[in-house]
Image (cartoon, rainbow, N blue to C red; front, side, top):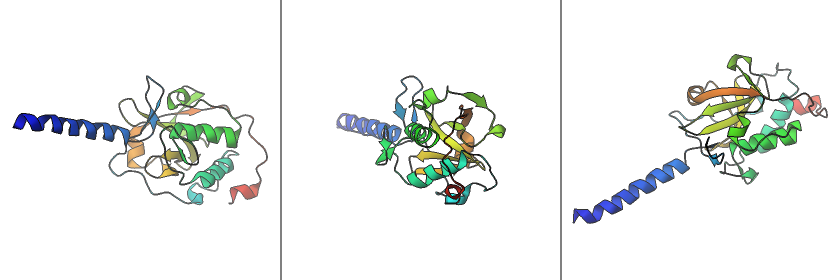
Length: 196
């Protein structure tokens, strides 16, 4: 009789493992460049913060553009492979943000983004730098640094939001940062855009 129950339990265990792998988070496999999911650690992510979550003293011309994108996309749900307001994954959100707000074309996948630009140290981060996290054995996550130790990203648990690099989870999984060439930024940003 017990021989009959083992196949069901093994199937159940396999299904739970597959489901756990799919529900883990947002990133890409380093081998196949396809979107994957990020893992959440104990403590998870901080709650979404308001528009004033980055110090006003940051004079970066990129910051008002990133704030506008955060406001427009805040709460858009995470969707693996998604690339619009119905759902977006981390690398698609970076690509959309750089194209629409900064006028810069960047690759679609986290792996490709991780090879763009120049590497910068964590203590040298500037608004607009890409920040990367190793969230699993071959899983990666990407966001856009906003200053004040905060970054903008598409979180699997809360959708598009800002998070702190000092959060226990993100600090533990931080990998590296890359700076892209942002010499020719759009100039049609008024000071009133920053105060929204």
